Length: 256
Image (tube, rainbow, N blue to C red):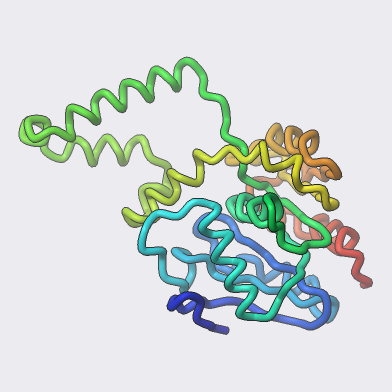
């Protein structure tokens, strides 16, 4: 399906009837990645999954966005569909956006929140990483000068490619800047403000958002519980589909 939000054509999935589950996806993951959630809830709930700006078939933003920008977009998207209340599942970066929607002076009406391998906690940097970052910034400052460009042509791009993640390297300039903004957002101050029942579903082998993040979130959210998927990674809902499906149905209180 497709609709227009603020002049931007947004591709999305809208399946089923009844109570609504809004799925907010991870970085670079199109809505189709979450088709198993739609199938699991088929005939039980309405599931809505938009392609976020910059991913899938929805055009990227004109300038770098942070989680607040994405949350505003989601509010307008839901308003276009006439949805004023929905259960929310946030995976990875989608967890950041969910938290922005649910905290603050005008929280979105969500009965329950499911966070799956969610982002939102900025890790502490080790002394080694701090030294590495300082060295990178110093070298980058030199290579960005006219003299540096002449003396070391192409070296800056080479250095950036080696340092950046695969997500960073494959992104456009706007989405690279967006990624930088997002990964530097520490949302721990928002977590105590979200008082609705919250379920954390996590892969024990997740290296992108480690299990320690989930354990921290469990302490900070006022009403949270943690379920782990042994051996599953950052896409734990795909690595452990049956466990996730049972947990999802139980948490959303849907019949089989």
